[in-house]
Image 1 (tube, one colour):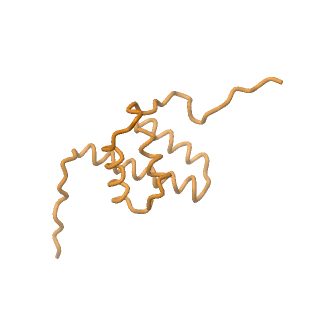
Image 2 (cartoon, helix red, strand yellow):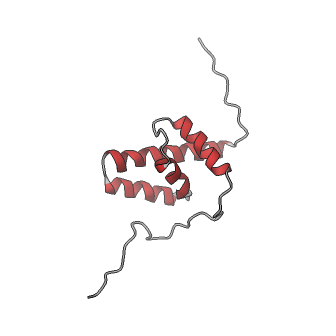
Image 3 (cartoon, helix red, strand yellow):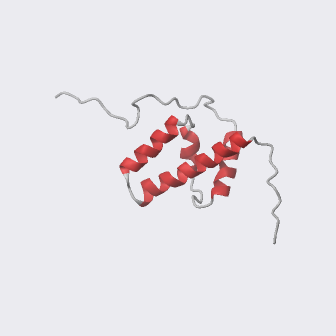
Length: 109
């Protein structure tokens, strides 16, 4: 019987939980968008990202960053480095009610 050593980290449980949630949402979005082209499931997942108040840039970075989306541990490490890197635009995008999906007003001819 092998006993694994506990994970040593300075991050709080909430931060770790949040990081894994972002990784799992990126994995599910990749499957919905890339593997199945399922627009309704993609929309529901993006709505979940918004409802949870997560920064969509974190998910987009994992989703379109060319990373192995099957490796959740690696995704969490990438998300950690993404959040630690200073960003030019410090303020995260604000989710607006009804902003997804983006709809254009009908133009009159």
